[in-house]
Length: 275
Image 1 (tube, rainbow, N blue to C red):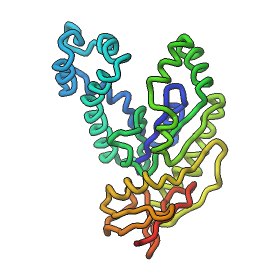
Image 2: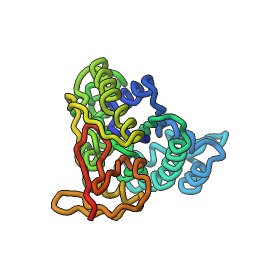
Image 3: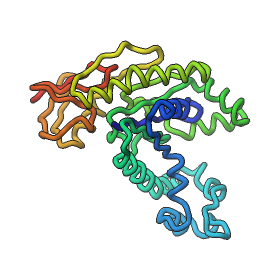
């Protein structure tokens, strides 16, 4: 079972995924992969050098990160050009590792999930949120940023509104780290584990709602997710209507039972009927 987790800087995304890793998940960190794909000899580094010249390379041929950052940080067009080079390589490597994993629960830690190639490959997308003022306070206290720099970093990233558009689960982290680790542990036991069990056994389980956790019936996202598995899907009067493909839909997070498809998440009550 593959889960994607996203969230802005200082939201608590990494706290969540690290706690799930201690409980048994395999976490694939796309920040780490983003560094791998620009090592010397990697195709992405060659493309970067072709695009911006030898000035973005150090004497040994490795990437001069600061030089590249100086070019792209405040220029939207240059940042898009860089993303067009790096994102396909990052997403392909991350998804390949997820598919090859032997772990029961694989978590993709994805800083930039909105609009990416990974937006509908998982059985669920989790967005971690925190109020902007809380995030600024964390960046100033924990990373010694100035208030102005912290706000600029937050503003340069995807917005909470964008991340909500591709979320199945929204987790709010406006508290201290210890309390949020407790929330992550509760989510593991009451959501992730029974979610995986439902996909294994074919029996949907129901969990009680959790404080600070919002389950979203994201019909557009589910439509795209099911379509990846050959299902013809339409949204009619706020409901999903499907023509099944005959494929195993558990990799999309769904259970098939007679004429009804059930989303297997224990915190959701979402069904689709056959057209």
